[in-house]
Image (cartoon, rainbow over all chains, first blue to last red; front, side, top):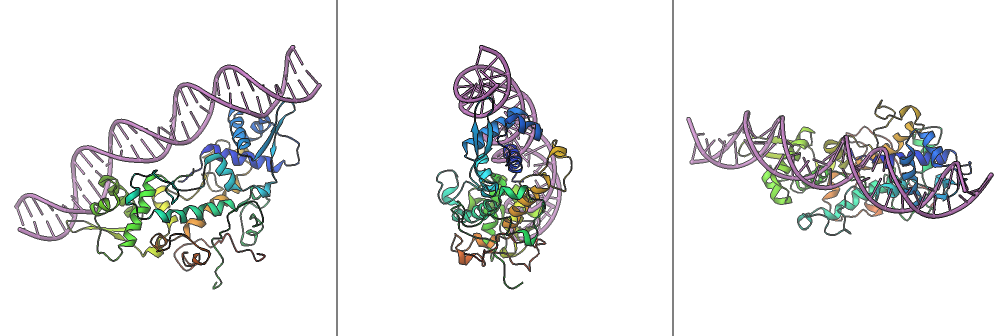
Length: 168
Length: 168
DNA sequence: TAAAATAGTACTAAAAAGGTACTGTTTTAT
DNA sequence: ATAAAACAGTACCTTTTTAGTACTATTTTA
């Protein structure tokens, strides 16, 4: 089912919590654990990963805790997944990788995998964390622009997919 | 890495082979096995799944074999993944599922998962199998329309994501 | 100096994936 | 008729990945 692993799943839940309480000064692992019903060790582990990936800032000591390193509309779901679960690709067989696949020499569609991976990545890189906290949960046609990260952000990718067809 | 399982990976390779030899009358499991360097039992297993999922037709007997049930431009990568790997969703926690998640009652972002799943599914459902056999492997901006399944096909989904922003 | 928080590492049990083997059924050609 | 070549279905086992926990060290504040 191409499922996210639990860590990543939990990570999105946790970051959504941060996004919702973005005004609060710092949130501790204990705080998050209570709010999400996830075990403290589990939460702690994921927070460390998010820290290492640059999505959170941390402060040690008795008044320490974590906070988002950027605004929720400048962090994408795709980026979160990449931090917790590695590259946003459905296969490791791309034009750039070498030797990962034993049938590589005979594989005739190798260059085409890039298209699948790109379509997938592009879709998730455009979905901002802030869309997880918006009052209306489901995207309607009119919401689609509001719930997208715009071109001027930090994302290098410039390809657009799913362009509106002018014939309908 | 949100990776496709091997069966699905192989399945796309196999169906791409069918797409490429769409004029040939029937292709046997042995034929596919030779062409892809995948073991015969493996190929056989996947072909059966694809048959069951309605993507292939089969004929028994000594002159038997398999063929695509539709044209390659009417089969989407997303559909293939759904047949071989289940629903195109990154989490099983959606508004429609019940009881799959033990922290369900305390999960505040449950309705929002649908957005992630939809973005993902929509991207892959629009990518046709025929794009795997096109001479130019990578999508350029101008290719994007050519390599998309159009609205008039059998897909019920009508949402579009990633619309071009008129400010750039 | 004690308490509350982050930082880092290592281990283990459970679940999923990947692959193979075996047996049965259908059709064609001799 | 019967053997061969292909599809059809099921069950099993091994390996890998995932999920979760435990333990220890470090930092900061009151």
